[in-house]
Image 1 (cartoon, rainbow, N blue to C red):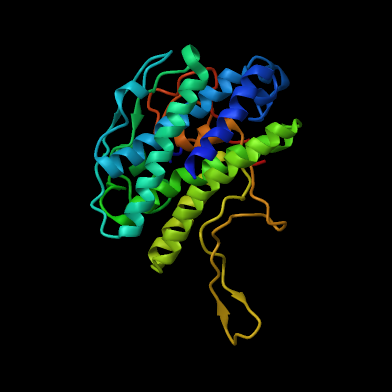
Image 2: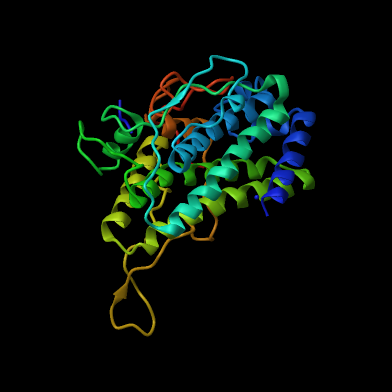
Amino acid sequence: MQTFDARVARRESRRAFFTAAVSAGAIGAGAFAFATAASAQTVTEADVLNFALNLEYLEANFYSFAVNGTPIPAESTGGTGIQGVAYGGQQVPFTDRKVRSYAQEIAADELAHVNFLRTTLGAAAVAQPRIDVGTSPAGAFSQAAVAAGLIQQGQRFNPYSSDENFLLGSFIFEDVGVTAYKGASPLLSTPAYIDAAAGILAAEAYHAAIVRTSLYAKGIRTLISAAGGISDARDSLDGRGDLDQGIQTRRVAVAGYSDTVDVSNIAPTDANGIPYSRSAQQVLNIVYLTPEAVTAGGFFPRGVNGTIKTSAASTATNG
């Protein structure tokens, strides 16, 4: 097995979308491209929201540790299913004031997302599962770094040790959320839902772009290469398609220059300038750090809570 808010307006947009979706009953279920029609029919909007909540728990805890040195508040973690702790994180000794500011902003956003989804779901909200955001050589971040070729098996990758490592740790997650929301867009038909979903996608893309821009702006070739390795690892985990992209394109010829130049790749898109998509199962492949169909692993050592919990087999392709 391979391893691997204006903030207020944004929250209100998400609230309008998710509240409407829960009431509607069927639109959200298809949005994550389930393997078969039968499996999609057994999934409710609450299930889809709970899938998103699991991912928000992961991101919120990573950023909370990085900024505060602590996991998210206990009052934001209860619910149905087996409750677990988020463990192993540390406070980052930021030296770059811009990176620290970005981390503080994203940490506040992610905790707000957790609380928003829990309020929307009410008694149906799943509890936070057990989450590994630690630095052990056998832990999720280190295994992701092995898969990306950043370290060797048995070595330790610590995303909390420096600004640069923090950005690489963030890069593992941020693009994944964008591609998941992009995967939902063709399945929405109600204008209000489309408008709200576009707002959610934009919010997630802002976070991803902050991380990608910060990595590229460092101007360190090893960082650019490391981001490329993480991108390749995500591709190897979520299916056969080679759609994930790093933060720099290959060298290209540019009019007015006598030589080829490096070009940034802050928005990873296709030839039409459109980001690619992932299904829920492909997202689980990445956070479980495996290309196989399993129900636990990686950043969720005991799996996620809720109905949507199984990753896809390696024959899956990107959307």
